[in-house]
Image 1 (cartoon, one colour):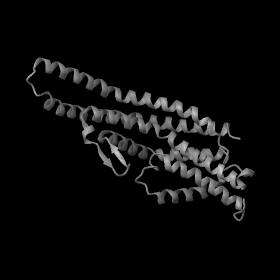
Image 2: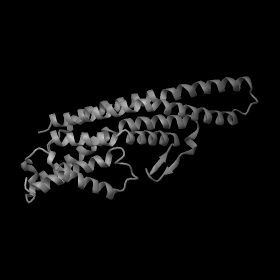
Image 3: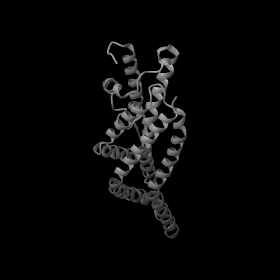
Image 4: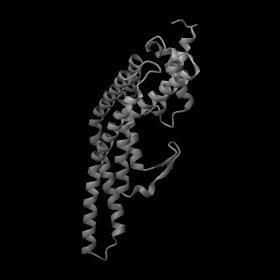
Length: 260
């Protein structure tokens, strides 16, 4: 394709839109701490690099104003769907940390996080940032880029079958809650037993100041559980990342198989 051909720059623009959607929703790239200007610069550079992976030629519809708007919307949603599909395991880890923080009494310590624009639980934030750090160390962002390149190789510009993403995303959302519950189950069961023991202690020793005793006990127990959780989490993180990559490839195949 000639560099003087308007279709070339139109293809670059559509590639830029898909990459921008991914960078907006994906882990690491989509962090609020990453400047928007940096994400735009990365998207522009990658668009010129990856435009050669797109099937040619472009559909005739994109050369008309309405068809171009539809293609831009499809490309933006394609990138966002790919980004959101890689976020499920992060949400599961944060949920487990939020449960632990709530059980150990840190719900009173929730503070406004200017990076996210919302209140966060300290333990949930700790688990999320720890997983994100290991995700970066294990080349997790590269897996996202590999899936993105694969999408350009098989999914035509403006031709993704977004309807196929719905059932897959619903299935993965259900798996998200199952994974989050399995991760948080040890905390829930442990603190349930602690609450039962404290209830029995309150019946045996009514004059004891149960409130003053329970707060430091739960805090100490929660910190110990958090340490054990993170210690045993590291060996299984590579499996989570591999599963995320497999899910992204499955999503790419579904988007390509149902496209026009």
